Amino acid sequence: MGLFDKKYCDICGEKIGLLGNRKLEDGNLCKDCAKKLSPWFSERRNSTVSEIKEQLAYREKNQERASQFRTTRSYGEDWKLLLDEEHRWFTVTRARDLADANPDILDYTALTGCRVDIDESRTEQMREDADGKEVSYVPPRYEYSYDFDIIISVNHPYFDEMRFPLNSSSVYYEPQHAPMSRSPMGHPKRLSAGRVDPEDCAEYRKYRQMGEEICQRLNE
Image (cartoon, rainbow, N blue to C red; front, top):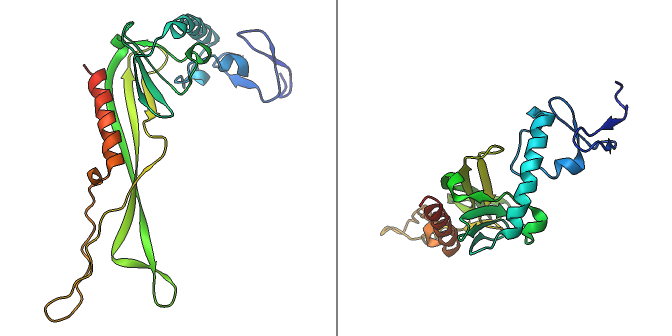
């Protein structure tokens, strides 16, 4: 077959448009059928047509659960972990209409673990010298930023991890710095290094505690 020969979806049979093909191990998948797969699924290219059909059948059954899901607890901001404690179900989604979005609805028994991943990055703060040039403080000063991810491990046929951001924007923390002082002889002392303890930051504590609460609840 040539590069530009017409291709047809091996799932629905519809003709696949230019740039619309999603390759499978032994066939082709149109973008509309691909959208119906689990958002946590990442093995599409290594999947057969038969395996994709099995997953789409599971996704249709999942639609029934999504329409029955009743949120009793919610954690997060943009992305949310939702619990249905009556059915003992949970899901992770950013959608408001679960029936329409069809997020994967899992039983509590599918849980195998939960942890919080805190990513820290830092940016050096600079100052202007007498010549108007940017130079480092002595000792160097930094601003820190933090992002919190929840990683939920699951026993599931199509994925084994659900990872989502707990905070919608980075948490920034600037350590306090000791003021310049002078020795008894009148010589200036070096500024002491900032005390890097993000627990001083209320927002940091908020997300750290929220992450711990989520994992404690899911690990019960």
